[in-house]
Length: 271
Ligand SMILES: [Fe+2]
Ligand SMILES: [Fe+2]
Image (cartoon, rainbow, N blue to C red):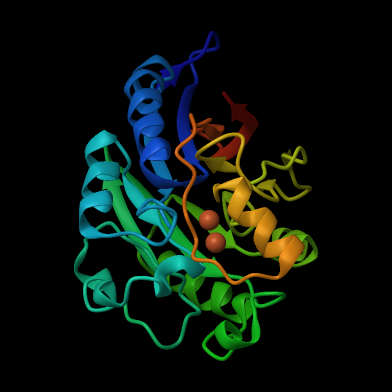
C-alpha cells in the first residue's frame, strides 16, 4: 500500500495475462521479482491457463506461480487439456476455475484476506464462440456472475475482481456494462492480445477487454508460428506446440483509493 501526497492510502493491484509455457513462466518470475516490490503491490492475480507448455496447468506450474508472488491463479478453456488434473483443481487452495463450467469441480470464486483487506476474485468463461463441444458444459456467464457476486458479498469482501475468459469482444464489453458499479474490476483474458481500451466505466468499475499474454513473442498467440500456418493454410490438424521464443509481459495495474474504495487508475503494462 502507498500513501500519496494527500495522505490517502492507495491499494495497488497487479493482474497478469495468460502465462504461456516455460518462457512465459520465466518471464513472470523475472517481472514479479521486481514489480511487486517496486510498485508496492498489495494483491496479484495471474491467469495460468497456458502455463503447462501452452496447454493447461499442472500442480508444478501452479506452485511456481504462487511462489513467484501471485495471490491466486485463474484459469480458462485450457483446463480440459490435462485430464489428470480434473480431480486436483479443487484441492489447490488458490486456484480458480470458471464458475460457469458445469462438468468440473473447483472454486469459481475465492476470498483472500491480506493485511486486513478482503479480496474477492471470480473466474468466468464466455459462451460465445467457445466451440460447440465446450459450450455443452458452459452455463450463462451473466447469471453466474450474479450468483458469485452475491456469494462474495455475503462474505463481506472489500473488493471484487472478475476474470472473464472469453473469445468474443462483444460478450466481454457487454459483461463490463453488466457488472459496472457492482465489481471493482472486470478484465478479459484468453485472446492473448492486449486490448487498448482500458477504462473506468461510468459507475466506477475498471475494465479492459483483454489483459494480453505473458508468453513468447514471434508466435501465433503462443503457438509456434510454423505449426499455426500449416493449420490455417493447409487445414492440417497438428498438435499444439508452444513456442520457446523470448517472452513479453502483459498485465494491468490498478490504483484504488482505500477510503472511497474506488479505482482511480488502470494502466496497461506491455514489456
Ligand atoms: Fe490463454
Ligand atoms: Fe483460453
